[in-house]
Length: 376
Image (cartoon, rainbow, N blue to C red):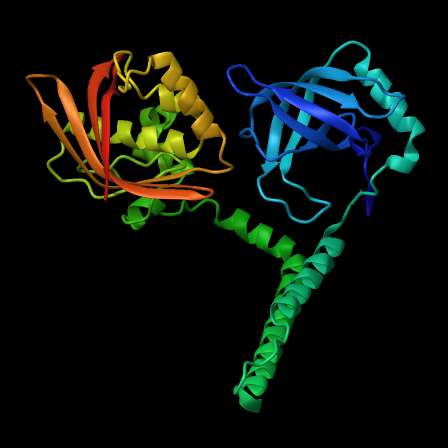
């Protein structure tokens, strides 16, 4: 086991935390632990990873004093995993104002009893802990239950066989984990030897697979487009294929073979709109709407944007699915109409509607000017 550097040592501190992000409601939480590099704030609402926020830490005990500055959300845990692992966000300090960092260092040095024991495990320790977890999980998931009335001894016999089978599978998993750990150098060497032969393009080999964010990044990268098929190792295409889906949304992969460039551009605009919504990227979502978009209902554009920000960022997750996407273009009005089945899911709510988006070219891209939906 390797010792954690002092700057990364985490300490318990009873404090209230307030996170501020321009244009968003403040997030109130409690401090779970803190180090010279960052902190973990326990809270029900989270920001996406990579978000920069201003913070205020107000200790409920004397000795340290309030801390203020800026930090970046590194990761978030949206569901609690026990009392010691609450829901919240892990953050890295970017700036601590005034003498806050020095005060925090002195407080940590004088409160060794508050330090959370932690160390960096080596490979053998990780292997052992993983094996123990697999065995304990198998035993926990196969706890015997009381037979129902009239079930008789036969049900108990089947339960015993099931537990023995689960335990045997856990032991096999343990042996496989140990073998993988000890043969890791051999695997690395084999990987290096095979690196000279590029693998086939996964998205071409599996045309029905929904492309991931990495697929979309490669497909939309200007550098990859300029390099051509020789740079990516894929064969040249005789006809353009369907646009890759942005990460975060599931979309219908069917695209009529007669689609022209404009229809493909409209399809991509709809997919990016759904992806931004699913990833809770409010700025990207709002950028999908044209300046002349009218939210209707007598609401102003500013009030509508405020409402959309709150509804998109408040849930712990949002999932938007687009299916049966059809696109038509009216050359006379220079508008496009996209109709599809939309499935929306968030904690405690889900719906399925038939949505119609009317789009017009605005600032060099197809953007939404009208939006209508009806329940299915």
